[in-house]
Amino acid sequence: MNKTGVAELKKTLKPEKTAIDLMVTAFVRPTEDGKEIVSYNKHRLLSMEDEEIFKYLDIAKSSLGGKFDKNLLNIDFSLDSEKEGGSQQKLMELRKDGLKTDELVKSFMERINASYDFGENYMITLFHGSYDIPVKTKDKMNLGDSEDVYEFIIGSISPMKLEKAGLYFDSEKNEFRTIEQKLTVDKPITGFLFPAFNDRATDIHQMLYFTKKADDIHPELINELSGEKAPIPADIQKNIFENIISEVAGKTTFEEEKAIHEKVLKIIESRQFKEEDLAVDKDEIFRILSESIEENIEKIQFEKAFESALEMYDNSNFSLDNLIDANSFDIQMADVKIKVSPDKKDMVEQVDINGSKYFAIPVSTNIEINGKTIKGGEI
Image (cartoon, rainbow, N blue to C red; front, top):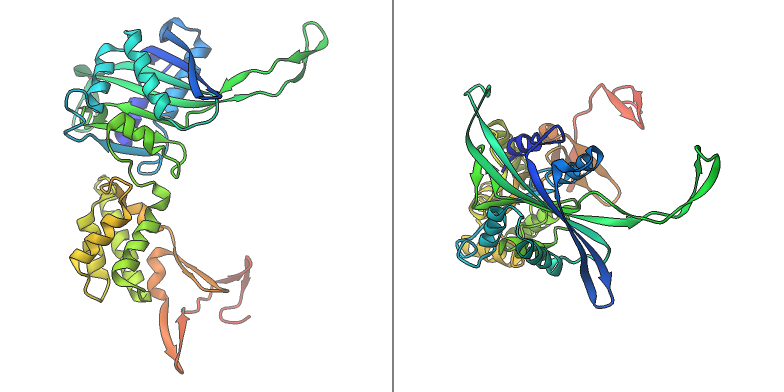
């Protein structure tokens, strides 16, 4: 999926005209032996009060929020998971049932609960919806007619927190009264959408996974839902990329680092212009390094380092914008840090003066020290 598909789907999650028809919630609490589901509730969304509808739809929309390849992860199903009894088939069965069969829904929620590592109270919510996909012209004008129906399940896990007890002033009775402690539902921290909504159509071979924290993706839940390994968390992709470089090339030069940064940045800009995703595979990473590093990189050595670094993860889910900082090119030394705009990094050169290496930067007439403008070249 991409942000265009998510944006279109979010428009169907508005109180005045929602695609959601049925919703099931479960309350999970920790116990001495682990955790247990203590209640199930099923609701026809449109039969609820307006304020409740708004709150629940906000949970559904929040489960589709964030940035792709950081908070939103596309998970592809393998052929094995699509066989009878596989993870994808279990989701297909749940979607086809429309959350109507209690036994099926409870079994699915128990699977989520068993695979989700969270030591506090939380709420599991499942939404079922159907969206009549309107036909659009080439210039994206909506014709109103529908040729296809997108039927989907949104799942979310929301932590619950205990409000503090206290006092409040009751203006009707003109007196202070006590506030009882209540468990309240917070924004979702994990969720999923099945099937994916790709090219304005149903794609049963993929699901969209949501995580509020890019460095805490709950790989055990991804494995339970999809039968697949977890993608590499966005926050550690850069570290893994750098470790692979060190393994196959040792220490790189200043010019090689500039070349790697420039090559990745150009691919990002090209794909963004074409509205393509930023996923990058092993072969493309090898090509980037081979064209940027002067020393010849052996393909066998690279593949060995790559597979070793990604042993715990699905190695098909690197994203280009996680490999570099696209907004800055930083040079860090023991006591000095130089921060350069990516398009200006060629202004910085490494030079040799009397046997010592220095970074040389042309002096501009617009110089600020601690926010104060000074004379060009004069301090």
